Image (cartoon, rainbow, N blue to C red; front, side, top):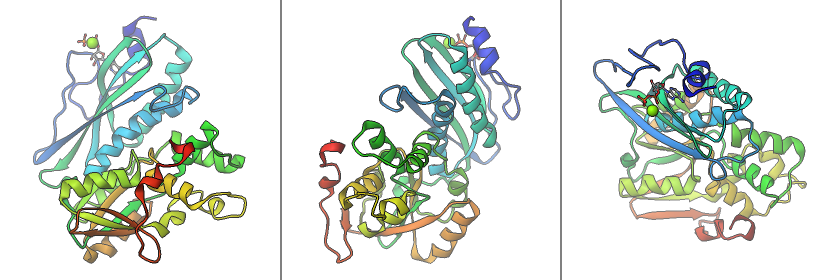
Length: 325
Ligand code: ADP
Ligand code: MG
């Protein structure tokens, strides 16, 4: 099968909102008046961002999900995306699964595939998404202010738990592993929450590299610091019942590493003034997720992770284990 047959069969769809989709030299998009375009790219490389064992359908889902997550963090409504794909060979089973997972998520968000590029090479997937947001209303990393509450949506830490199980550094009961693996391979971009937080949150970021590391980007961009409560860790991880049980042989540092430094969660970390507490909870409820308050923004720069007694924990220890090295 040639390049153009491949594109026509797996990636070309009838145009809906776009002015022009796949097939010409450029796609054409017409943002509504008064809207700004929000644009983001994410590349996925085998071995670095996904394991060779992942099902192609899950990979298609994840490739778009991580991009939609960036739109969510800006409070943008998804419009369209392009797909640049390097493939080692034409494997029709792989292409069918990959495009099914990709386009199902695209359809769920009304986000059209309008173009791309296809070439031979080591497996590499690069997507650029386009979204729209009313001018001046995008959520930014730079808006956090001292006194704001800090929140995270949904659950965090489970993707890292699955990764460590894959690596063999810890073992999980089958049902716990299956659920954690689902979180790692099929993340849910918090698009509805991002939209609901416009005008409510003072800043936002999506959690891709680890909760505290990503929060640090917000703090730096905003010129502030933060105190985060370590005691929230057990309630932030979806495998909470397991890690709190006698079977879950978790030392507190392993749990803290998964939750606070885990990565691959694709939840939103955001800040909002205390006056917006009810509005934050309403936004999370409407978006079908939850928002957990994990700390507070402070004027003093830096990030302090504190235990129940208010003692600061050494953040370096989150990365300091052998099995997480
Ligand atoms: P050009 O040579 O002008 O870059 P190509 O021959 O690479 O165009 O691609 C032909 C058309 O197919 C273009 O409209 C391009 O956007 C689209 N396309 C190529 N690869 C993909 C893909 N993986 N998914 C969606 N559209 C694609
Ligand atoms: Mg080309």
